[in-house]
Image (tube, rainbow, N blue to C red; front, side):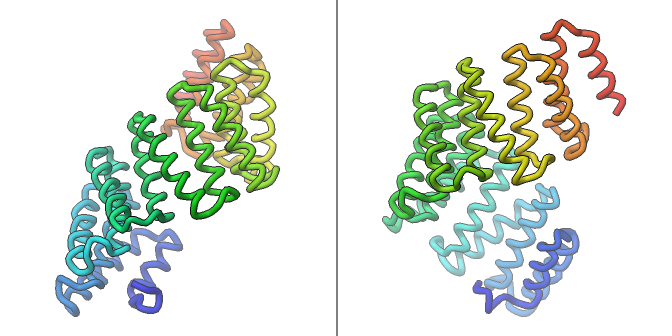
Length: 328
């Protein structure tokens, strides 16, 4: 549905979503759906559009079990009205796949990701949309630990992006870095280093010497060097990434916290425990502030602190951290 054909109710729903008033948006969307059915009948594009909003808003609000039938009804109706190759159908496949991925129904998510790819490939054209769907499936495979399958897909996507966008584009730098990370995951460190260096060079070329995406590439190369024991080479990379992220994103941004955590882990590997503890305390403080004590990131930070104190031969301090965390 084009912008000029958006109904007044859809405009109101969009406005509420922009304000993050999702519960109000869902209530209004339910009214919109009922009125659309009354006016147009069950099989109409307006009804399909409302169904899609209902599905996505249920998911946004964490009402996962309630979301699923609406995703399915939207897709079935859209296909019936406009055919499988309609762009809205492929968007629906994307949303439904992400829903399944979120709730851990990975086989269902994989089937929908593959369906989206096959619909794009059926035209015989290599497009940026096809590249996006290849990367989406790669992301799923990465989550499932199928790193080699993910690498294959990411390389296909990178080739398409390079062909369409040229060599000097953000997608190329990001794609190279993502592939490098996957090679680190499968411990193919020689190939990982090749891609890390390509990604870093490309990031400098595309983004310049101060950009969050450059910091990501610095972090990735730092992780590689830490993993293979080249601690002295990793340290300046982490420090530079930290400097960039702090300057551009602020001292409490999640990217800053990630880099601080990487640096603390590195100092632990280097047996620079006092420096590691100081940084890990900051990480824990920021995690508690941003996520609260029940979040996995916070629990990992507590575990990191405890491991550092145990490595220092200070089990009493480790126990103290655990007790303090329990009392929060």
